[in-house]
Structures are given as C-alpha cells and as structure tokens.
Length: 512
Length: 61
Image (cartoon, rainbow over all chains, first blue to last red):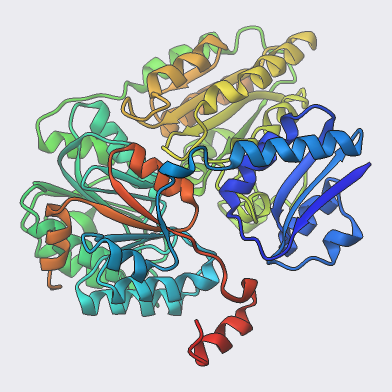
C-alpha cells in the first residue's frame, strides 16, 4: 500500500529531503520511500519507482511530500514520526538564529564578507545581486544560470571590486575554509584560479600530499572563459593573487578558453610578475610558454610542475610500475573478458579518463562522449568499452551531486559486473565536508559481490580506483584508500594513473 | 586591472559566511571553525517564477 503525507507551503531543501529519504527507508515496515518538494522532477522520480498517487500529482512545487509503500498505515505513521524526530533540530535553546535574507544577515553581522549561494539557477541572479549590493563577495554553487545572467552578475561584482566565484562554482578555498564541495587543504604559497572545480581540488590535493599547500583557490565556474562571459572572474582572480602577499606562485586551470577570451587572458598572463603554471586543456605548449609561464599537459603534470617551482621532487610513480601491476592483474581472467567500464562522478575525470584510455581501447562509448558518434543513447546499457558520467543531468536532475549522494553511482557496479565481457571497472571517489562520510566503504559490499560473480563465471574482475581528497578531509584519504585495498581494489594515486593502469590491462587483454 | 583592495581585505579578514541554500553547507563551515549565518531561503511565491517577478514589480519581495 502507498501512503502519503503532504504539507502545503513548507519548503525543505534537497539535502535535507535526501537525508529524510535515507532515514525513511531504514524504518521497519517501509519497502520504498521518498521525500521531496513536489517538483516536476520529483513527480517523475516517484512515477518511476511506482509511488505516484493522484494526491501527489495535484501538488504544486511549494508542497512538501513524504511518500512510501509500507506494510501498514501504522508502520508508515511511525516511520514519519521517526523521520521528523531525527531530522528536527536537537536543542531549540542552542538553535542558531537564521535570517530571512542575505541583507538581514549582513545587517546583523556586519563582519560577514562572503555569501555562499546554492539556490535553483533561476533565482541565482537575484540572490547574487542582493549579496553584492550588501557588499559581500559571492561563491555561487547554483548551476543552469543563463550566460547573459552570469555576465550581469560578474559585471556588477567587477564594478564593486568584489569576487563572484561561479555560478557553478563547486570548489573554492578562501582563508583556509573549504567552501561548497572542496577538500580541506593545508595552507601554503600556491594560489589557484580555475574554471574546473575538480581540477582545482585535484591540484590542491597533490600539493597538500607533497607537504605544501594553497593560499587561496578561486573557482570561476565552468562558463567563465566562454565568449559571452569573457573571463571576468579569472582576470579578477589573477589580479587578486598577484597582489596578495601570501601567494608566491599562481596556478591557472581551465579547459581551452574561447579564442577571444584566450587572447585577452594570454595578454594579462604575459604581464604577471609571479611564477606561474598554466594548464588550459588542449592549449599548445608554445602558446603558454610564450607568456613566460610553465606549461602543463594534464592535471597531474600541473601539480608536479608547480612543486618543481619550490624544488619539491614529489613523484606520482612511473608507467613501468603500472605495466608490472597490469601483468599481475590479468592473471586468472576468462577469455571473454576484454572491456573496460568507467563509472565516474563528474565530467572532468570522465574526460581525463577517456583521453588516457582512448588509444588502448580504440574508443569509448559514453553519455558524454569525446565525439558524437560515440554517444550512448540515454538509458542504454553499456557496450564494449564504456565510461559514464554519473554527474550528468540524466542522473542528477533534482538530486544533489554524486559527491554528496553516493547512491547515484552505486548501482553501476553490479550492473557492469553482470556483463561477462568486462575485465576492468574504473571508479573515482571525491572527499568533501558535505559529502558522504564513508564513500569507499559504502560501495565495498557491491565490489565484493561483483568479484564473487566474476569468480563464479570462472573469471576475475579487476577494480581500479582513485580517491580525490586529503588527509585533512574528515573522511581521511588514507582510511578510504585502505578500505578499497582491503576489498582487493587497485588504488592509484590519481585518476589519470587509474586510467593508464586500465589501459595497460586492456592492451594485455586485447593481445591475449 | 581590477581594484584589488576589497579582495585583499577578504583575504586578510576573518571569514564570515552568509549561506543562502542548504543548511548543511553552513553546518560544515561551522564544523571547520568558521562563522556561518544561515538564510532561510525559499522560492518566493512558492516557486512560481512569474509570481515572483510580479511581486518584485509590486515591491512586495
């Protein structure tokens, strides 16, 4: 039986409803439950999982819904009670004050200097304007903001001399704080401005691991270097880090900027006084070196070149090491095991992985392919060599990012393992304060089951993984890596190296 | 080049964040030792964009 609880005009954000959904599904007598605001996406999701009812269909986006198939009404009522009790603030006396607007908060606490904004994209411009007008810098996690609106907010920020990081800024470390989905990093002499959140987090994590750290990291959002936005935040970020006495070296990270923006940027970079490393994916070496900057060919290289500036000879290991590991890994595989399957939590690592595996595989199918002919139709099962981005909208619409909601990617493991032609599964994991507290441990049971399944077919399924994060992250990268190793997973230092190891295994299987 | 004084002032000051969005983002900042003020944001007019625009026009936002 399906039971519902509807509260009109009660707004609860998606992270809280996610946590309520998790609690609901743990209650006795509940088969499947779901909690959310009755948006179109919510209605589609509950339709898909068979929980749709006419009452919910009649709800508006302003209504909060709790729905479940339960063995009895009593079990459902009891579960609802528990969900609300567990998600309610524990101590009213200590409940911190909250405010009706950013301006009201600023008035109450005049020291407030940064506004972090994560509202649906259509409301972002209004909230950013309010925060900028109240004199605060902004870090905007909201996405799906039209480019002309992004330009408008960034022009206003520039006029006021305030930073506008984002929209779609997932990573920024300001004064040591890990904002949004960043890792917690040691502080040090490197300032980073980047249009890729994962890219910033990746380079900063290697600097941390090598014993160095970051002064500030400024995320611009992925669209900053597109023509209509014009690189406003990256240019301001460069100016700020050039003037900041704590920043001794500067790192710039992006996909290849639009031509007109690249021209403007290169001319600014040429005038920079501080030593810098530039990684603009797909930009040739000469163009970068001509500006007096150190060129980097990929994210790993970017971190290592930066460390060279401080005479730190940190190494991520050699290719020959990986070849050796691959030689051992393929022992015991069944003859039909030929293919790699990548299940990624975001676009940057998917791209990096596919590039690294392209030659060995001869091409990978994907929901976000390298070229259109490799596009996997939406909802289609993986075929041959495939890599899926679970951060794409088809998986995340109306849900938090897979770095927060680890359940989005989880089904991939057993789904891919069910295909006897699969030899290797590649996974990435990302650590961040608001993220899952044990993302690696969470999927270990599925990994063990998948390995058993392959064994029962007379083969051996290899798992390769990398964990992005630091020893300062609450999940602790060492502990996360160890959980994977204990489950027989080959843990690589970086996502790129994970893809190289997968390539070596595929080459051996191809030639077998 | 941009006027960097306000950005440098941010880098030199104690970070105090106003969080407009999921409260868990404010909670994790406090747990890291920073001050975070939570704004109870909800879509104006219950998420109806046109209604929001109208309210703004009428000065009721």
